[in-house]
Length: 391
View 1 (spheres, rainbow, N blue to C red):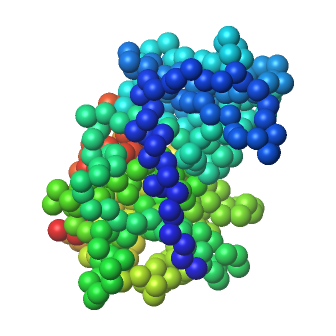
View 2: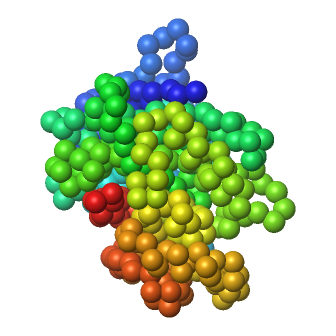
View 3: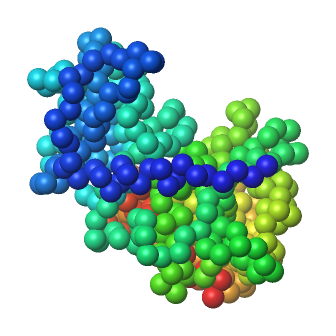
């Protein structure tokens, strides 16, 4: 079953109206189902670049802002509890303002109210993270213009597909981007990129956090990338003994036996090695290392973002299982792109993976960017990787 993801368009008012437009809000108060909703701006970008978050919660005793990757909001990496404590203003709203300006980007946030985490009830865009629903706010900026919606370029569509996974015995979901013009029909067939999220996310992440659809729209409009279909699978599978997030053979079986055949049967794809690519970030990058890089019979191009080899034991097992497959990859002309941040906590995993590719004479492009394990980097990596594909 295929369903168009229309809520993407409804999120735009939050993006475009977020900069310092807060008018005098009515006093914070509980309203019944039969009353008009309380109108206030829950996220406001101030003129100096700092961001104010608001919440109306009249009976709350303690409220904390949880905001992933937002400057000035503690992330809990130093052993202290994550989040920024909020206090009440004169109108009764819980309020917190970041201490420093927030860089342009896409950010997730939630509120912890008396120990319970909830998404923003005034939010208009959300992401289904592995740990629960998060609200999403976009802060556009000129330096990252190609990663945001532009009204003056043609736009593709994102749809949600349900498919039967015979290998897992369950119904699975994926998000699928089709390029501008695809929905008009015709005989044109397109190459396909399989793009996988990280451990803490879901199959909606590359759209709602990664803006993959906008990045592709803008690259295609500028002639920098080929029109392509982008399939964003769900990277997790039901828990069972012997299968874990980074080496998940259940995911591999579903991908190769169920999802790829489904996409080729239901979309106008160009099936074949030269017209099929795989990429992923963090856990999705590990999936790509395990189930994409050795599959030169399936994927011609490979993108690995922010991950590497976890241990010497894993490296030894990987080489034992994939010796012939890696030799086949070395003979393939398709691009291999490997990117990681200098401040990323997984940077130590990069040298073992690079050594494997060097030893097997697999040609690859290596990018060591600034920054860490963040969506700021992953959006950049996709923007760099997509133009390499299907040339």
